[in-house]
Image 1 (tube, rainbow, N blue to C red):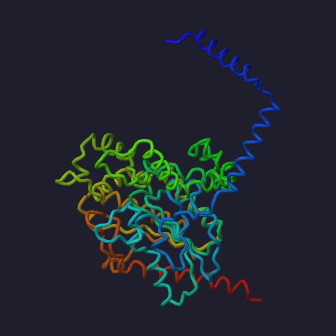
Image 2: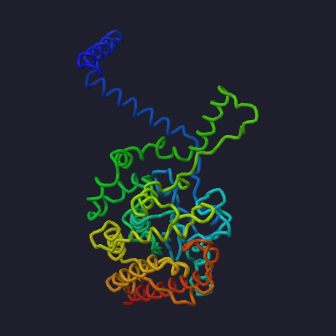
Image 3: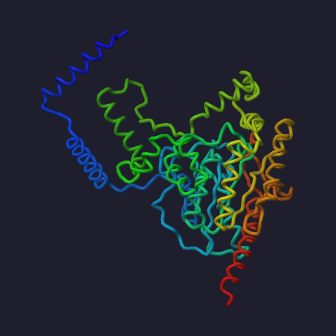
Length: 430
């Protein structure tokens, strides 16, 4: 173990080295160094070449009146602020998770590389609006795989700031009241730090969730292009590093020389949740999550998650949902908030089905408090709406065919726009 005198001698040697170099720290010298650092940060940003962000779902919405806004999971900007505001008669902000993706049978739910092969519920709904005489509509798309309640709250604030006319918000029954998963990863906290300041009720969350580095990025880092635009160059930098590394240490004969892409953060397993469910809740018994081939099964996983539902009004997720509803109500904007439908196969697990029923009962209670002419909460959908919906194999929430769901959502949007038109007519009536 090192003695205190050893540390003192080491510090003295560092001071001696600095004296030999002729450097002596002074307030003016430190200030000068800071100015030079700022100068080079600004200059490096000015010479950074133009490069568009790689936006998820851009391939799915190409050529349509839809603007994908959520950035890659590694980007602290969270949404693309460079996206232009689009003029439209009806501007819709669609905030949802993977339940709004219509997956091709056999597709991987978290694979961005093949996401363009899938369809989107917002796209189908936008098409279904035209026969209902709702023309010149535009959707700002806020779909993020594995979206959780806290990110939905932040996105609602951001959508309202973009002056949307109507918000479509999906509530996922497996996570809406699950306090063990109120956010997915921490990449959205730099943006949350910047956004929550506008809502006093969210101020207590500022020291609780975002880290000091998140606050630093929100206050300072985002103003420098070298930091704000860096995520767009992540793959280029990775390829350059691989190239330099390969030049120094050539690949062994027979080894694949193709540079590997860094694994998407979306492909990382939810280790904390898995540990909690398997070790704490299931007592280490993995058999309830896998099939006969020892493969993880989505439906089994979700049915264990829904058991962790906490309906206590003092719980985090309950508070987050209330704040989300309150900020929409205060904005005066129209909103369609719906509980994502689940497969009837959920009935096979009585405990999971019972948890689902208690979730719906609590949301029905909130519906009585918040449902209005401007805000519509849909908790129970009629059977005919879902009769043609095809859920993915061994999955209780992802779909391969939305059936009549898009037409139903379009009809609800159309009804809300009718009340909006009536209000506008009253405003302009002398």
